[in-house]
Each structure stands twice: as structure tokens, then as C-alpha cells.
Image 1 (tube, chains in turn blue, orange):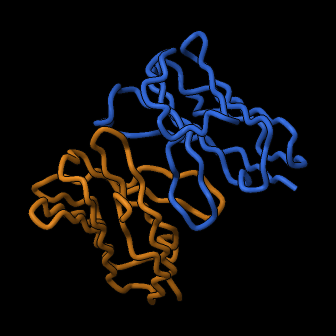
Image 2 (cartoon, helix red, strand yellow; image 1 turned 90 degrees about the horizontal axis):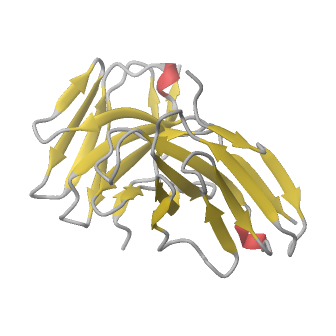
Image 3 (cartoon, chains in turn brown, blue; image 1 turned 90 degrees about the vertical axis):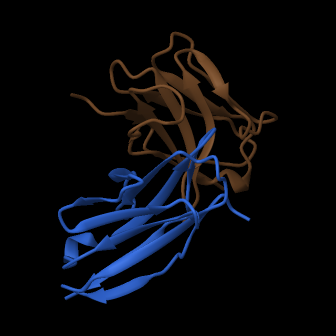
Amino acid sequence: EAGVVQSPRYKIIEKKQPVAFWCNPISGHNTLYWYLQNLGQGPELLIRYENEEAVDDSQLPKDRFSAERLKGVDSTLKIQPAELGDSAVYLCASSGTSGTNTGELFFGEGSRLTVL
Amino acid sequence: RKEVEQDPGPFNVPEGATVAFNCTYSNSASQSFFWYRQDCRKEPKLLMSVYSSGNEDGRFTAQLNRASQYISLLIRDSKLSDSATYLCVGSASKIIFGSGTRLSIRP
């Protein structure tokens, strides 16, 4: 069974440029998460989807970040314009259970962003 | 104050030693707790869930103390392959990760 797939694995851009990350969760997983992880820190939630609905986007900086999961399967996270402080690893995770009492999150390998 | 706090380490212990990590959480409404393992430049992976009664999986034992709001992870007979970052996770209205504790096992 395929795991969570993310692309691109690495992206280097100049500040003020746009960037987009794509995630395909494990088949059948209705809950999808986007996390941001800085070096030496734990993952921080950006947004959680239940099917196509964003049920928790309170931590998403909406002035420059946007996300969508139009058909309740794959998802895209966009940053426009990127700032130097956005350099981090963007992790996508999925879960086969809904809500926050989920048994396990399955993470993709992440998309490492460097903003110059 | 962070909702889930861990000692960042690093813990540097010899192979075969027993090592223990603690993690504290501030949200008393937290219901579920987990330990994840993250290898360098890799994604986090679930190590084990933490139950109120305590649970053991081979060399790993997890404990939950709701009164003091902390969870612990004990690793016995540590192996070189246990070297990683261990992330404490609490779940209430959202899933919160701690910053992680780095463990390095030396030969």
C-alpha cells in the first residue's frame, strides 16, 4: 500500500516568489493535515481537513498561505509571497479516523523549502 | 507556555543503558497521548500510544500520570538504532507535538 506522497521534496525560491506543495494521502484516509516543522522543533499544525472541509485552519497565516482539498483526496498548500521565515519542512499527514482522537498519523517525507 | 513540553536533550547514553524521557502537558482536556519517533531528516512515525494503565512494547514502556499531567517513555537495553528524536504528542481539540527529545546511543 502506498504511503502519503508529497512533492516536491525540495524547493529553493527567492523571497516574494510563490510556491506550492502537493500531497496525496493514503487511499481511504479522510483526514488530512498540513504541518510545518522548523529545525529542532516539533511539527506545528497549519490546517486539518475532514474530507474536503477545512475543520481547523486557525494556525494558517491566511495573508500569505492558502490550502485546498477540492475533491476530498489530494491537497495543495500554497504560499504567496514567500518570506525568508517560511524556510522549513512542510509535512503532510493523513489518518483513517476523524477528529483529534486519532490513533495514528501517517506522514509523508515532507517538502523542504528554502527561501533566499 | 507551550501546550506540550519536553526536555530537548540531547541525551547521550551508552549502548545497553536504560533511558527515560518525560513530557508535560498543560491542557487538562487532553485525552489521547502518543510517542512518535523521528530519524534525522525523516518524517515522524508512531512509536506507541500511551494508555492510562501504562503500556509496554518490547523494550519500550510508556506511562501516563493524569494527576501531574505528564507522560513518560522508558527505553531499556538501548540499541544504537534507538538514536533518534522522540516526539511527545497530546490530543485535545487538536493534536499537539512537543519539540522533541534527541537521543544518541554511543557504542
